Length: 119
Image 1: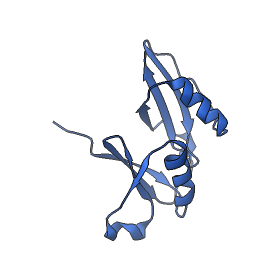
Image 2: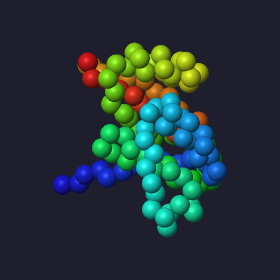
Image 3: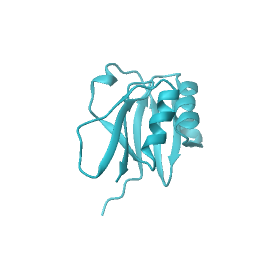
Image 4: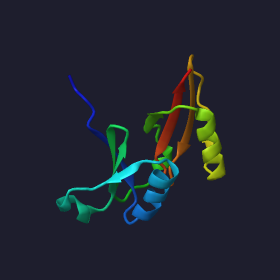
């Protein structure tokens, strides 16, 4: 059996302050300490419930062209829509799936994010 330990997505080099603003302050994740021998490479590590999300700092282009994404299960998607609207984050409703309400949006670095709520 395989268990997901963490997921890593990319942010541009030197964008950690903006990543903290978006992921910690807006979305509410908790930053956790990276091992000392990895700190020089930049990026940051986050906790989302019992899972970890690693934001790796690197140079990249055309991030917004990919369908690759992380999906976070939430409660009260209506309140999340309101929160994103207040933060001027554009989102869209993807193709309908029975018994599921969901939205897609991009983080400031072009990574696609899905929030979903089981009905």
